Image (cartoon, rainbow, N blue to C red):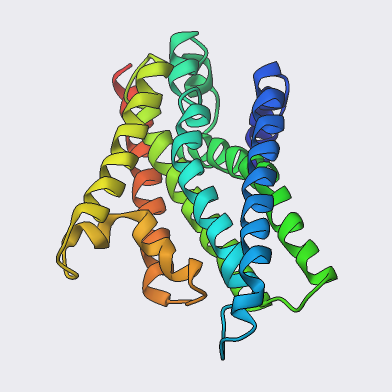
Length: 247
């Protein structure tokens, strides 16, 4: 049942013309950042050749590109999560969905899975572009895979939070603004916190992504993303359960 709901979300996403516009625009932006970083690396390569243990192309090009993609996702994800439940409630189709023989968990996980698959397809061009570097030089496969895993976990956490905010309102625009405000607030609080042991560093998803971006696979960071995602998915299920129970 989760698979059917996920496919329903995917079909509805690809049926919207705006989806194809966003897809094309993002590929252009990703390619622009990639080529800009590659050009900057090639300009300083003669100087790097004279330095022992100089950073390679993966550190100089791939890691900054992934860091930029992570920031773009913070702004992009609320645009897609805003319609998951808020749009259903505004168009009066949520009542039909809740009256179907589906649990709140099936509904939430189906929508979450569908959008996560879509976002992975949206970002698939990034690792493909970066792996073209292997045609001309050696690359750090571990760093690339670490960033791919970190980006997947970060995206899942963004979707879970956006899905919960979407369940709180009937207006998709308000859901998008709310989710973006929370994500941007966590990010700004993180970069503004001076103390290394500040709690803002602990609760900011982007802060935990930095270790993946640097090639460090920390089980603590992975656990944070799993718990963060699970917490907001459970809150969304609880919200839908209350809607079903109290109308």
